[in-house]
Length: 317
Image 1 (tube, helix red, strand yellow):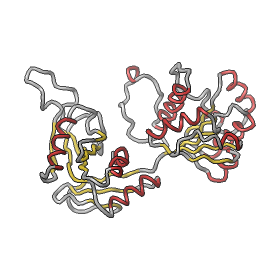
Image 2 (cartoon, one colour):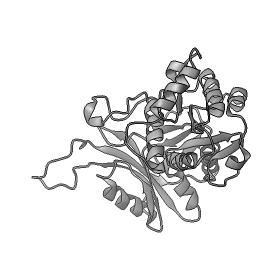
Image 3 (cartoon, rainbow, N blue to C red):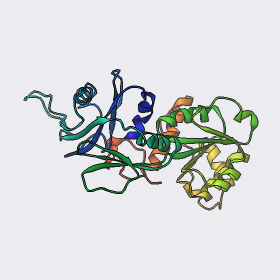
Image 4 (cartoon, one colour):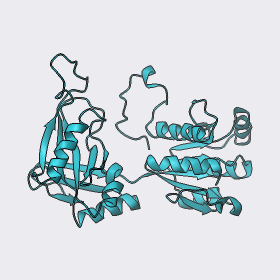
């Protein structure tokens, strides 16, 4: 998707970049429509259109455009490079890939502003020469590919702890906007948190109540004076996922304290999926895995044990 590769495009602003975008397919595939590779003139690249099986062919085509060939709509197949006796992969359908230069101004700045500012944006590119880019425009008469860039989901972490720093660092690659809220000045001022997240000194319950912000809220302080108040506010705010860190014994005590609170049955505790991890990174991975599963209305079970489609079609919140 454009959001996945756009930081690379911005970083390469002083050299040509070709975007290869999956705009159609005639069968199943590992990547959704809109999957994008960005290939720079210096040979570096980011992203994929198929998860790996046609990337070599797409790279060659993108580099040909960089070398002066005309932008084009190309059709590639995961089985095209196989010998006749080799088994074709299950996702052997044809992929339609648009190869064109990254947009210039003002489309470039509009996409950058939307990505950095977490604002939704409709991005359209015509599928016939000269492959014109536009943003926020009504549908035209000709064939086009339109991608709706959503704003990022907001993950609120209650507690400016070392675990919160680890969760925030991992969440960046998942395109979550992370806000850490803690009333304790010594914790907020630790300097441990990535620059991509927002750290706020405030009582979390007051902040949540006043702003109503948060697709997911996870409490991490182990301090009932902070966590319990934040949980009450988060449940009342309509956050799609509310979870609390702690052992099973700690969570049982928490539930006794919160008995009768509206929506307490939605509270997930102990926070995270059953990964068996012990380190900070493993615990952060467990917590974020549950956030992703909840956001996609999935169970978090092993894929081999479920029969739903691997990718969720619509987010749960």
